[in-house]
Image 1 (cartoon, protein in one colour):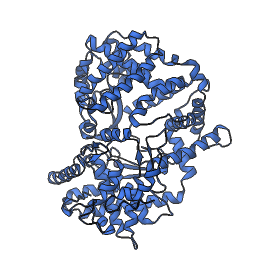
Image 2 (cartoon, helix red, strand yellow):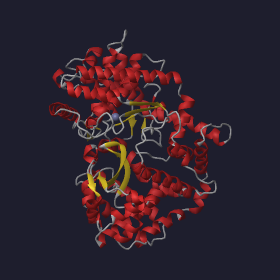
Image 3 (tube, rainbow, N blue to C red):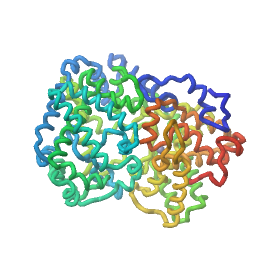
Length: 635
Ligand SMILES: [Zn+2]
């Protein structure tokens, strides 16, 4: 798997993955192939075969929630019922929107709309209170816009106009199935686009969202309600929470809230209603006939460059495994992930954490007081490995009747989930909850609870194998573990303490030094040309700090091995980022993803470390060389 025409010293990613990239074919129903995507495809194939066997009664599971997952899987496969009904099931929801005459009417109905999945001119959700990680807070933000980011609405961005054209075609097709007259359909669509453009002027961009602390703006309900008027925010919260309605909310996007009243002039309110009609319709096409399903995926597929929808069977599996995620993840983990491997990786995580502490203690830019706090934070990280011991009780509440229509049962399940999330407002934070299910090929760090999650599905080759060398495992899962731990100390994580509270545990001087390093990391990536676009250094900085920390800590471990193979380490690092992606998808990620493109992750991160230069004799005339004074090491 190597491309001999490219020297590793010039392009590690191409040298390692080039041969594969030449012939690899991206599946028609996916935006990418290789690396994570390939593992994900394999997991999907394996699990679909199991779901089929369950559905045929050839297999049974002792996980009770799996029964419902399988039943849902079968319901998706039964297209006849959905095709017979066409658009009819969603019409009552859409009609509710058109009965509204005023913002007062909207306030009267908003709580019900929220639970019904009807689009409102704001979004409400319950999450951990950033300043007190034991309890929850109610967050308020503006509506989602149609385009992937507000920057697409900026003048001179040709992608925005093209995408809106595709969106309009899709919306027009869906609207043509409604009872609206042709004239109304056109007016609804025009109003939708106009309202969305207005929203885009008020809500945050992806770069602004990448700053976690900027989301924490506690505001008295009275003040928030005054901004939202004539929309009656107090009435809505009292309908949703009764006596438990909060007196303080968190304005995630203060400008969006402060300017919300701009939606309620008579003319704009009508535009909102039409926007809500169109967007709510499109939110529901996946629960309707096959024809509407296909219409409803057009825009998303265009965004990612995906020519075709997944097969019905894949959709059935994907739907069931998303809704009953933890049950499916526990099944996957118990069936395909060995106890031996689990223990081995837990030991590796512990080793990474211990080495991280050592590195912090040797760190040259921190004072002893800050070091002590950082080490405390490392000592208290909770490790969630593979899959939970038991399925969270919430999943046993996701029940429906055999007689329910597909539309009704999906609405029932959405409502149960939403109500559960809202009910958390008065409950303590449940640290047993897992951020990702066992069958997901990914890993994460949650700064609000200071825990790391490694689903079973990522714990396989090339990331990890008991049959791979330790050097390879360190360049794969080791670096990923180090990456996730580093999120505790990236530009966002650094602002939360060991309990997950937003708190300043830094001395002023140390934080200044850290900020200077963060700035260096922004500069290292900012403006790098990639597939016709450029990297936004600020958008991707936290992930790059995490990659930097991941390599730093695992290279330190490498030095302690009796027989380290640094070549194998860097080659496997490049292998895990192997990826071929549709060009549309690359552009989408450049504009909205907090990760740098895989190719750059593979090629930029190593050059900050002396070990890279030593392993492959990289010298100043090589492409993957940077001068020692430009090399960045943060953690
Ligand atoms: Zn990350």
